[in-house]
Every structure is written in C-alpha cells, then in structure tokens.
Image 1 (tube, protein in one colour):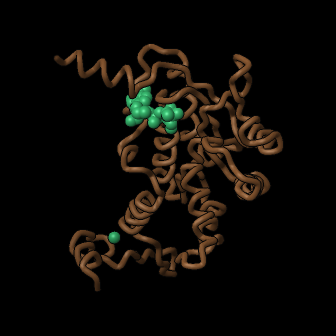
Image 2 (cartoon, rainbow, N blue to C red; image 1 turned 60 degrees about the vertical axis):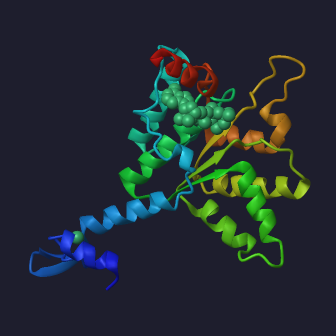
Length: 247
Ligand SMILES: Nc1ncnc2c1ncn2[C@@H]1O[C@H](COP(=O)(O)OP(=O)(O)OP(=O)(O)O)[C@@H](O)[C@H]1O
Ligand SMILES: [Mg+2]
Ligand SMILES: [Zn+2]
C-alpha cells in the first residue's frame, strides 16, 4: 500500500480505500467504483491535461464581462457548451486580438468538462505541439512521434491554443493536418484559439486561411463554431487599471 492509498483508506469510509464498493442487485452482488476513486481520477486527469500554470485557476466564474456584449456572448456560448456536453457536435474556435481572454475561456471549458464528466482532455499550444513532434525525431529523444500524438488524437476534448501562431514547414503542416483531420473524421471535439481573423480588414492582414491553408481552414469551419472575441487587452489595460484604481 502506498502512502496515498493508506491516506485514502483512512479518508474513505465507503470503500475502505480500495476504490470499490459492493452493492446488492437483487440476489447478486456487484462491484462499483467508489465515488472517491472517480474524484481521484478527475484530479489526475486535470493534472495531466497540460494546462499551463498561468491558466490553472481560470474558470468561467472568474471571467469578467465588463458590460461588453462580445465578452458576454463568448462567456454565454462557453457555458452553453459545458452544459450541453457531451451532446455537442461542434467545438469552438475563439478568434480575437491578444489579451481578450480566448485562452482563459478555452481552459475554463476544458477544466469544467473534465470535472463534470471525467472525460479525457488535453491542452496544447500549437507551437509546443509542433516542437514536441519535431523533437521526437531526434534519435536521442525519449519519446516517439506516436507517443506525442496518441493523447492528442485520442482525448475526448483537445484545446489547440494559438493555431497558426508560427510559420510552418511542409512536414509541420502535414502533422497539423493529420491531427485535425483525424479528429475531424472521428467527430472528436476540438477547441481552438487564434489571433488570425476569418476575413481581412485591411490588405496587410493575414487571415487564418493564409496561415494554415484552405484545406485545414475548411475542415475547421465544419468542426467548430466561430466565436469572435472583441475587447480590450486585459493584460495591458484592465489588469493595469485595477492596480491604479487601488492606489
Ligand atoms: N474577461 C476577463 N476576465 C478575467 N480575466 C481575464 C479576462 N480576459 C483575460 N483575462 C486574463 O488576462 C490574461 C490574458 O488572457 P488570455 O491569455 O486568455 O488572452 P488571449 O486572448 O488568449 O491572448 P493571446 O491572443 O495573446 O493568446 C489571462 O491571465 C486571463 O486570465
Ligand atoms: Mg491565448
Ligand atoms: Zn472510496
């Protein structure tokens, strides 16, 4: 018995720390997972979801809407997604300028779904994912490409943060295409964030399609509802304002 098991044995009166309870169903006795082991599984899923420390405490409750209709809509859509899950057919693509809260919302959804259902969920920054795949090609690497990709392909909910945030080589494009096409084909939910708009507002601006190519852009349209988030950069203005309000 490990230290953790021993602690649970003291803590859980229902199962005596075994993680299982025996129930009578008519004449038969059946074993069922104890609530404490389901809670433990959720905690370990959350710990393994790859959520960056900065976002560990992000929830929908902690997302302020500041009387801004775009933030209100984004929060409402996020809540609706959580409430409807798992009966949802499309993920969400949050599009908007830096600091408007896209990653905050994506993480809040991911955490709440893991907490609510115990389903598997993974957070990956687009650049980190490509780097981990690239590193796996190094002969000295501890992990293979498939070991990196397996959880990304199989998790029930994937958050892919900052899609298109770096220029990619042909093989990187193939990798991202493979991942999203697999999830698309298997109808798996993906929540994405991007700084790149759907359409150009001036000639210099690059669109999401410019960054990721039209075949991927087309699939994402079918996989995700597009949610534009417009507001002030929370990092620059709102955090700063709160600080000066206090003084
Ligand atoms: N409406 C909000 N209420 C509370 N906190 C917020 C809000 N918007 C943003 N934040 C906080 O501000 C910081 C920046 O937000 P976030 O990282 O989600 O922005 P982003 O839209 O993903 O930006 P980028 O495009 O640069 O990735 C985070 O710490 C986040 O928790
Ligand atoms: Mg972000
Ligand atoms: Zn128990």
